[in-house]
Length: 116
Image 1 (tube, rainbow, N blue to C red):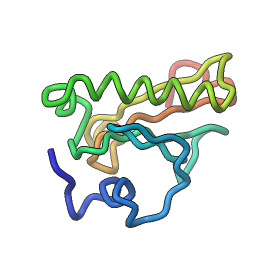
Image 2 (cartoon, rainbow, N blue to C red):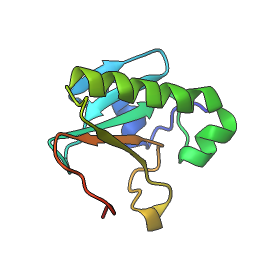
Image 3 (tube, helix red, strand yellow):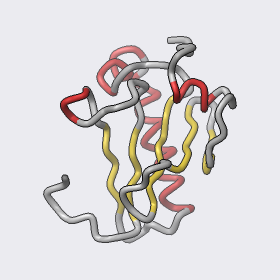
Image 4 (spheres, one colour):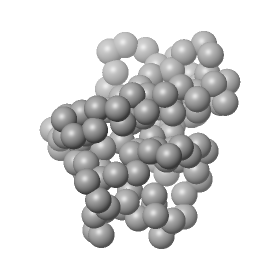
């Protein structure tokens, strides 16, 4: 799906809003979360606009794998070899606030279980 003009993450991907970008690929962009929930909190987003993980999986299944691989690369670069968490929030009830699918990479501390 093409970029959405009123989408915050589409604007970041296009370079219209500055972000602390830590990784880019042909299909993904990874940048630090402005409200981090862990010492390392990076959002990995597809360059294409899809509202949530299910929609992305339906329309671009290979991009789901690209998001996870980009997160792995960032985790390695950030020294998170001891462990990290990957989270997709899908829908407002799950805590999704920006409706452009994004994968949270969290690490750098004991994350415990259950989350939240």
